[in-house]
Length: 140
Image (cartoon, rainbow, N blue to C red; front, top):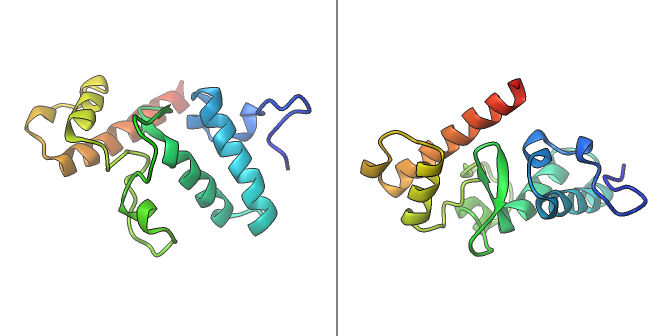
């Protein structure tokens, strides 16, 4: 099933809710990759993982949506290593970003205790804040 109209626009209703609240470039990246991955792998988890991996290369999850990253590249060790071997991911948080960038995102999302957190703690706190914001957005 194509996620694009005849005019080449993304059909937002075919995307995950976090992408429905994201900019057109993020939507296009995910939709195009998912369409191509489904042609190759069929409809299923592998195609969705491929689409999210492509999205995470250029975007990071901030709250309930995706925003362009400061620099493109793998977002965590799982993405850098490739494959689906069960290693945990950072859930859309750009774990390879600087601690300052992560701190700034934590400030934007009003994460309590952020000033005393290590980089790893900031990543975990951002994942939880993103999940919380996504839940709130779905409920409204």
